[in-house]
Image 1 (cartoon, rainbow, N blue to C red):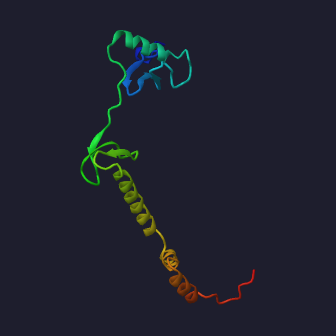
Image 2: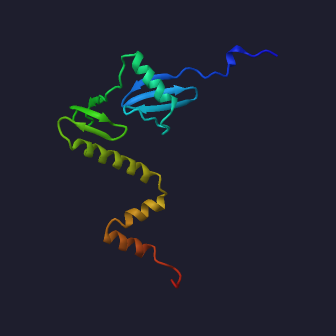
Image 3: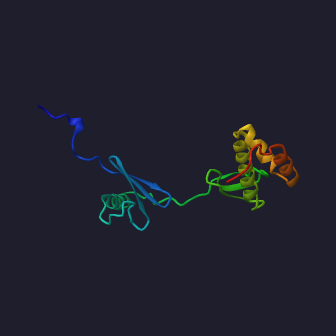
Length: 150
């Protein structure tokens, strides 16, 4: 019985990539992150990923990347903004409060979509308790027809 040469038991050489804040090291099916202080995400001080990064830095001139903020148009005023809309961490160059205005609009839209999923009775109850007058009218209209004894 002969061995298949493509299925050798020797692990593949680690693939090192410079990423923001450190290096990503792919070793077979495992991925490790080695930060600038040469600490691995697996918390093993003798991790082979650290040695792979050291070797990579000795033979390549590619250092770790510094974070560059992503810029886009502010969704409120159109001025330049930087950060991340997905993580809700951004800043408008014109008005710093635009993040909060945008965030409140997002929450109100989600709340309106959630309210649309309510049953008609739930919507009626919520509208009935919006003010004291509507609450009194609702309770009068839906008076108990049986004795309320606990």
